[in-house]
Length: 418
Image (cartoon, rainbow, N blue to C red; front, side):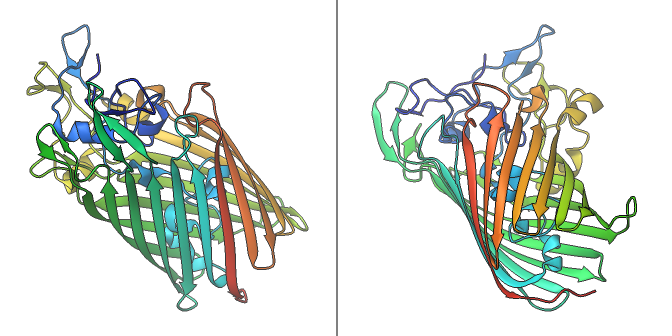
């Protein structure tokens, strides 16, 4: 039996079950889950565990993290390509995917605005808004910034006895600054700083404790490599990328309460861009993702004090970063299950009209995310519009009918350097 929370909303009449949270599993395993449940996790100890036949206890396959909205790909280009984004061609949305790519932007500056109605099958007023901007400081360096705002709508809160706790609007945001520089014409590095604000129910008193907003600081470290080479006698561009995102402080929602890791994530990927004929460009991309936070151990008792297999999840951030590669209780098999895959294809005709499709897969034991994506883009002069649509492979997914929109505007065209 899974532990349950003591607070829930009228939007979803059932008491929420605590979900898994490995790389968007917070979202994909939810049917009646509302984000406010993290408050209950913060102040209420686990009271029950799933018990296996050998007498061991394990409440989660992974450790809950704060601010999982940081793992949502916010722009429509990324969404349309199955979230395969770390090595594909750079654009203003690259701030989220891989800041190092910005060093190779072919425009002097630009802005982008994305809007994501989120989990519409669950509630109609959940959304993610993403605003980005960049400017080139020189031929080698680019400075960029972004703002992500995640709103969970208006939620009437009730206690376990269905007494009203008032109405609340849980919200979170992240403010980023990114600096990228190239070394020669093929390699670049990026560094991003981030402030994170998570206000789920500040001012609310639950279980005798005052809920407060969580604050954290984080950084991204990224790299990008590209090389032009002919394939089958045609021009081609091969690229590789890596991004470790959300390396930062922990978040707490009550004084002297439990502290949550940020969703530190390792993204590795490659992309191949082909020009098979004049005016035609096609890109194939593949990403691998792994969450770099502790995996919940297996305990030998229901009080979860004695660890039977695995490592103690109460670690420092640097320790968690490295030990996340070998801390799974079931060894290498479970570590490999924690890797999710994203693949995508993008086709452009004459830099005017583009089509995209992709596929996302996550192991059933670690989130069970599986979906097809599709998208389209239009460019006219310095203006562009992108659209993406997500089609989950499970009929009960709260992600059904998920869409993304992005509007781009580039300023002052820069001549390409040969």
